[in-house]
Structure formats: C-alpha cells, structure tokens
Length: 523
Image 1 (cartoon, rainbow, N blue to C red):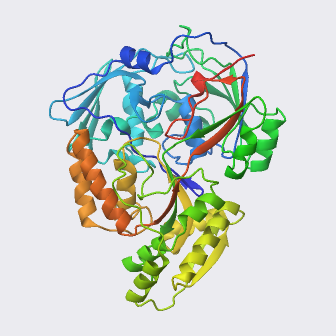
Image 2 (cartoon, rainbow, N blue to C red):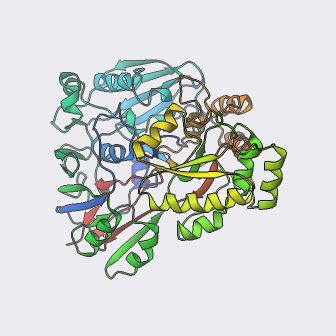
C-alpha cells in the first residue's frame, strides 16, 4: 500500500471450506490465455514514477520496490492473472487441515536464478525472515505458531487460531522465497542483486536511474507456446518521476510503456495513433487521513461534518477527470466490498448542523499535502472551500513528502491527503491494519482509531472460510468504520497506463502491478 513515501501491502480472497488441495496444472491452465502465436525476445522499456529502494522483501513496503520484487522473486502462492484470485506459485499445491489450524505446502521442482535448486530449507528460512519481529510485514503472521520442514518436498505452517486470510498472506511479496545461502552471506549485497526464482533476474541496478532485468533461464513456468516464460529477453525499468516526461517519452518512442499516466492527459494519450490506454481498476482508495487524537478531530461529529462537506463530485471532475468512483468505505473496492453501504451525502446544511452540535471552538484544521503535488493541492482547495462553508477553519500546509509522512507516523498531523493500496486481495489485511489500535501495530494506521466492536468483528471474520458469512461480517465493518468518520474517502481511483500497440499481453492486476513474464513484443 503506497502512502506518500511509505507503503504496506494487504488482503486476498482464497477460501477453503474443507481440506482442499489446489493443483497447479488445472489452475494454471485455466489462468493462462489459450495457446497463441507469441514472439520471443526483445527489450521492453518501461517508464514509471517509482523506483525500487531495495530488493530485500523483508524490509520494504514501497510500491517501487514491491512491483519490481514481484518480477524477480516468487512466493509459494501468487496472484492470478486478474489479481483478485490466487494460483500456485512455488508451491504446486497446498492443503488446509480439517481443523483449519495448519497448511501444508508441496514445493514444486524449481531453481533459483543461479541454477541451484529451491529447497524446503530455503522456504523455511524465507518464512522465518518474514516472521522476524523486525520484518516490515511480520504483522501478517501474528496467528502463526510454527513454521517447519516436513520433508524434502513439504513445509507446514501451524496457526494458533483460525485465520481465513492465510492463503492470501502466503501470496504477499514479502513472503518471497530467497536463496538462504546468498541472503545469509551478504544481506546488503542481496538487497542490490537478489537471488530468487522469479521469471527475471537483476542484471544491473542504478539507484535513481534504472533497473535492467534479464530473463531467468531457469524459470519453471511454461508460456502459451509451451516454452518457459518469460517471453522477453530484457526489461528496462526507468525511473521517470516527471509525469510530462513519461508522456512525451512514450509519444516520442523512447519508452514502450509509461506507467501512471496523469488523469488530465489520459484522454489525449488514448487518441494517439498506435497507442493503447489501460484504465485498470485496482485496490486503491484516495482519501484524507484523520488523526482522531487531535482536537477537534477527536469528535466524531466534526469528522462526519468534514465528510458531508466534501464535494466529491467536484473533486472527481476537477482532479480525477471522472475516472474515479465515489467511495462508500474506508477500504479500497476489494473482494468483500459491499454496495449496500450508503455513501455519506454531500450536504452542507447537515455539515453545519454537526459542527454546531459539536460546539466547535474555532481550532483550525491543518490539512497537509506534499509539496509539488498539484492534484493534492486541488483536492485540498476544494475541501477547504466546503469545510469552511460548514463553519470550520482550515489551513492548507505544504510539506515535502518525507516530512509530511513522518508527521503522520509520529501523530503530529491533523489531516493529510494521500492514498492507500492493497497488494493482496483479502480485505482483512487493510482493515486490520487501519483499525488495530495497539502501540505494537500502527495505531489504526496512524489514525489512532479504536472501536472494540470492529476488533471483535475482524476476529469473527477470520474464524470461518465461508465466503458468504465473511462477506456479511465485512459489510458490518465497512458500515461501522465509514460512519464513524474514520477518514474522508475521496475516490476509488484506477491505474492508468499507456503502451505502444506492439506491446502484447500487458495487464495491470487489481493488486497494482503487472506480470511482465506474460508480456511480449510484436516486432
């Protein structure tokens, strides 16, 4: 989940009602496109606004790193071709015990990029790194009791309690399987040139400039033509933070793909000859973080007034150019999202009434944005107008991204315009992250939100793999957190990417990244 300069990743729906074995051949066959005439070779050049900060999957949470790591390192379970489901990765199958308290993974025959075999010892080591208290995503394994080798082909994870999201957790990028010997020999070197078993490997990494990936000759998965993926020989991931430069470079032929096209240029790009525009619905929500410990935001009525005085239609038109969708949740529009929760209406009179009822004392609401973020400035200006009309005083503060985010983490902020994304498809992860009030966690993802009923409902949702029952529980959570004024949700926003028509097989998953192993160039 990217938020300013920091991110987490979360949630996926893969439910097992009883002892289930998921067999690779069947799922992969259904997941892959029908055999077609693909072309192999060539170099794909991608311009994107984020770069990987490290290839160490246990320390990172930024989207620049996540999306790159996904191309180089495999997990036991992986996102399917849509991102909304799961399919086998390095585990050719897995079984959930009848009592739901353990999962056994069967390792496929696979090799690391250096040609050495992937072993169960490597798997146990990798999961142990994820479960280290210092790991960024260790919170995902809170219910885990033990991680153990069963034999040379099987690894078992035993849980302290029922945990329905577990198969999704196994797919998170931070559960990447690394070569134990390479990691232990020099973790710092590994962070620059990892040894994993994904479709690509790192040829070179120039911080602040580009990453060059080349095909892993030992990759295990077959393509539509019956040969091992990937189709491409090489991928250049260029770090191009300037939006205009990404668009102009694409149009001039410098790039084959430009990721994250700005909303105000998307239409013009779509009208460019021999160009494709992808508007991909992903697990993303743009919203305003609110600090519930800061007055006057400690009063639910003030937070709800801010929601009622937020002109989301105007924001969607002026900032997102009608590519956004009006939200009704504090979470992205994920697998358990419900349309039954009514959006809070834009109603200035209602907002005025709530402000008066709260006895607002005139304390200014300081709305922070990242310096130079023009869309965020537009959002803040529209919000300021509505909030002031409702009777609130509002000051817009511009800080550099790092300083702004640090103020969110340390709790010195009041309100902050940003967004959140999810890298796995089970809603539990982001909801747990955003509502866990403990100091050991992120204190409600830095909102300082606390609702014991929500905590109890999340525990309830984890205790069953029945999708219908979980859906009902998640609908309750959605309704409660949204109407608590947890935040000010602005829009469900898509990922907009553009590419030359010679690029085939490009698709952004709901999780936000792309499977470059499926891409080929028609030339």
